[in-house]
Length: 92
Image 1 (cartoon, one colour):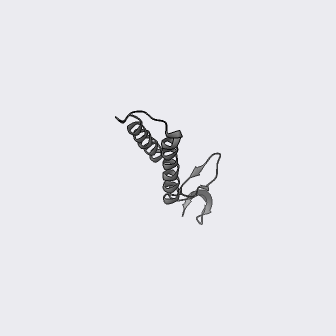
Image 2 (cartoon, rainbow, N blue to C red):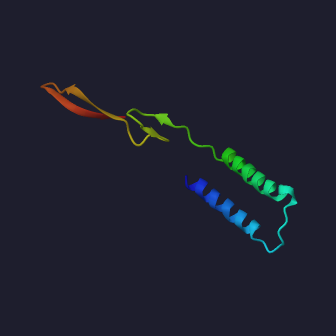
Image 3 (spheres, rainbow, N blue to C red):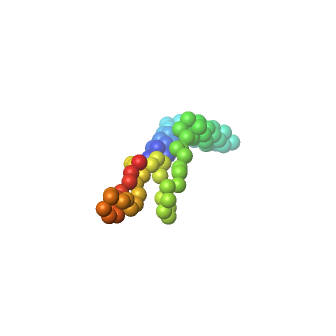
């Protein structure tokens, strides 16, 4: 999200710099606007191709999406210690 905001701010600053230049206003049939929009779109495509998002995996629970597992996987189970049953936590 931060990268997209930085890219958006950069594009907005570039567009503001281009549109507030000291040259007299002229339309050119929209060619300048087309070049600016095309450049922003091509730049966005190149950035998206160079930095793909990580694959998201499902680790259980409602809406439990994470790019990578967070720490060890643990669960509770019963274990016989020779005298009685104990509740233990197993992590791997």
